[in-house]
View (cartoon, rainbow, N blue to C red):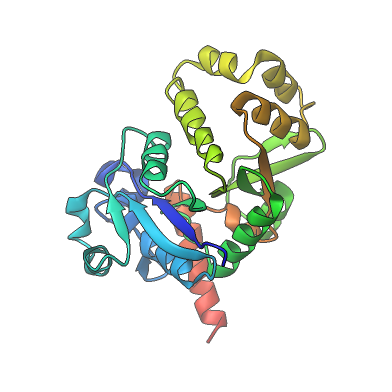
Length: 267
């Protein structure tokens, strides 16, 4: 029988000082209300409804903030959702969470601000990731499709040769060796305030080709696979909404309006 995924949900943020938390009047971004529910619970709902996910590990928010959300506190207290504290950065938190999960278990990594995530997206991504035969897989969506399906939402696009894509905050670590990629991400993130050091790690030639719009997705994946020593791939998501997360108060307003519209259409 195929092992189910353990889903890691990164839920660390800047607390009440986060712009989204301030706009929502919540103690932290993960608990901002969207569609009548804290965002993090919407993500957990999607994961628990997925046929691919066997368990959920929540990384953050701070333990004290759980007291402000009775349902989340009860899920953690009952062991339905495991909780662990965040580390110094998202990459460090992801690495620490992976270290807490048996090496033989496939892992799905996502974020607490993935407010439009649903079980169909999760199941599609996990099935395609397994079928890829790769060590690590990321979900992506065509930027053009995201713009068409989600008008008004600004998403960062990777402008590659022949196409532009958006990340979907969905990552699958499928083999024990694949977890080394999280350590590579952690090392790159440690130099995020020193761009020349990051460029040095990634390679000047690849960065220059990307800047000139000459780097294809296949070339980028091959380059990163060589750097990490692991086989990396992508899943092209047929759900443009999978590329929407709540990074800004404007994103929060958009997601709230969209979900309110869906409820109205649903009767």
